[in-house]
Length: 406
Ligand SMILES: Nc1ncnc2c1ncn2[C@@H]1O[C@H](COP(=O)(O)OP(=O)(O)O)[C@@H](O)[C@H]1O
Ligand SMILES: [Mg+2]
Image (cartoon, rainbow, N blue to C red):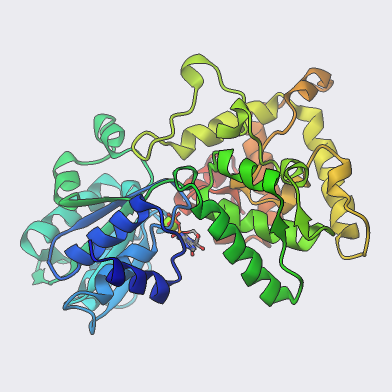
């Protein structure tokens, strides 16, 4: 492992941290870059997977050619083949012209297929073919074309499970997985958590021209113990919220707790989980679908609390810009909608006892959340999907299932 090169890469790409597992992943990326091998990056959501394909491309012989990052989860199922492989004019309704796909425009370059586990099976078959032979066929054509594209893929789903369930082709998996790189979850990175906190606090202080927040000793300890289900993305959002909302610049563990940073057994996900429902957290077994389902399950059992939370949000949003003493702290809840989905936690389980209204079903709750999020984002589905931390394809499906289509 060449420490100097690793440090240079970190500097160039703004990667913060010294955790050995992180260094190892960067090292593998550098080593594998000049080869033609396919790389599959594993890691939970928010661990920083997206920077590695760029590192690989920039350090390869392809660096002067095109690089495209494609999120397989956000391409609608109906057009995904045409986006990737192109189509012939008239091959389907709406195909008004011939179209080049990514495999054509990225010829001699690199394609980053993010959320590769979301690819439909038919597309997986086409992808396997192009990976094995360099050949592909545009939608609606029979002519075989050639391309030379290097693939780097990433996933946060358990691929073994997807294979077992028949959702992912085993042969394609082995083809993509020639070189696996695992991005470690934040909770394993020890002191990096604090480094990242400081980096984000500094960035935000520059952006908003405010004094950066700092941690007290007990707050530091709490951050290290917390499980960070949303990883670095969650940490960044948390630091941003605290920096902007809190009047305090010295952040105590008490303040962190009011933002959902827990240090007890709930900390793992912020959810109460029992027996077989317990969340699994390794990169291989982590499933956000599952986590979301559980979150909705729990939320549905606190019907009235949700309403209270929303009221709090509004009052807090209004008071946010006024110079006031620390408000969020007075309540045991952080304003829910000002917190990114992935870092929302139920902070006090005892309060579940106080349920009064009939709980909503998971489906009703999801439907309600989608409607509200769509409204907040003026119907923008991409932003809505991001806010709800689901793929755009899942959102489209749910919109259809719930009859929300206009
Ligand atoms: N080591 C790191 N140092 C600084 N920022 C990071 C680091 N890892 C991730 N980030 C930031 O965290 C956010 C989430 O990273 P991303 O690559 O989108 O995660 P993933 O694709 O694994 O869900 C991005 O804003 C990214 O810039
Ligand atoms: Mg990502």
